[in-house]
Length: 177
Image 1 (cartoon, rainbow, N blue to C red):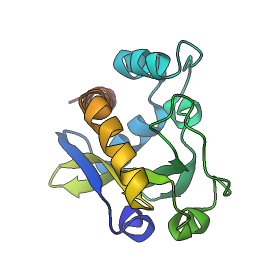
Image 2 (tube, rainbow, N blue to C red):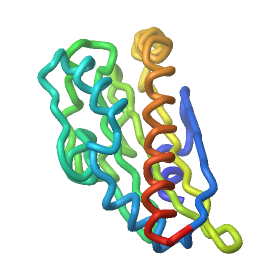
Image 3 (cartoon, helix red, strand yellow):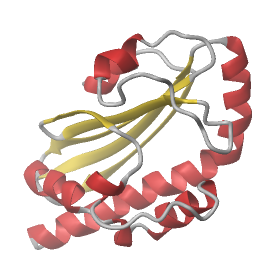
């Protein structure tokens, strides 16, 4: 699992999963084809976070503002190191599409956040999961991120539930379930 390789240890974690009445190919394709128009909670919360400047449109795979670090069969990991507790959340000066640079970042003052989405076979269907992990590079960033996490954890959970529900709905519709 790529998330384990890129962020094996973490200070914060959330994980959600849902069984989907569709095979893994159909479920993964549904996730890849998902649009932001199907995710009103995501759009609204990103607009709030971006002080109205962020407007997500189109396929989530292109519109989601976190770089994709890896993609494989039925799995992707997106991640960024940033100071999320700041209003404009400056990102670390590393290549944002380089998974090894992300994994190796140790410079103090950052929170490395990664979100993995994965589909695994489950009988005649599949299980879709979304897991977020955050590792802070020092005690000060961990303290700052803790306060931020308390504020956003509920909204982040709503976004993950919405993502899983919308993907399942799309996959099950395509599978005729």
